[in-house]
Image (cartoon, rainbow, N blue to C red; front, side, top):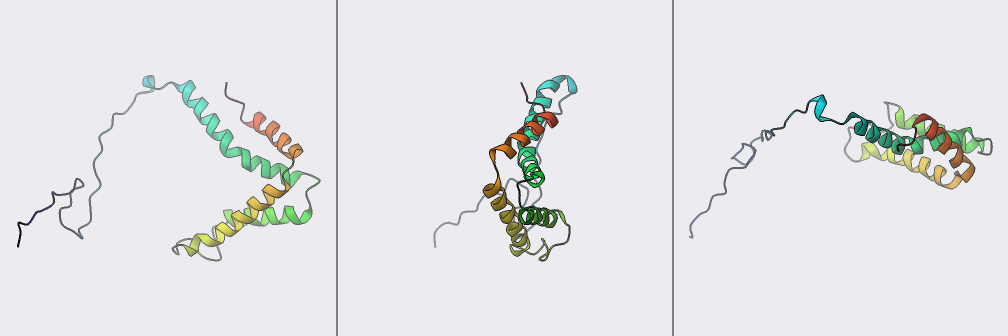
Length: 137
């Protein structure tokens, strides 16, 4: 038999296989409010808010649009309601299958959004977005 080699202990504190690992300690410096450019932080938050809010506002405008059929509106409301309800057909704690029903609802919502979105609706949504989240300059 050849010489045996032993691997070095892991960086997280556990040297035996099967033992739970302790979290790694990370040292960080806490910044004071004088170290942060608050105007830059607000610009970043407004940009993030705009990008997150845009699809939601477009869906809202699509549902409020008089040219959108009742069937599309009801399906969108049903999908959105299902996504925000705490109770599901398949509970989310079940691995893989738990989020499958949410994926189906989201797919239906995105399909309706993609096939029924018009430039007029998109323009109204842009005006509402600019009003609620002023553009960052």
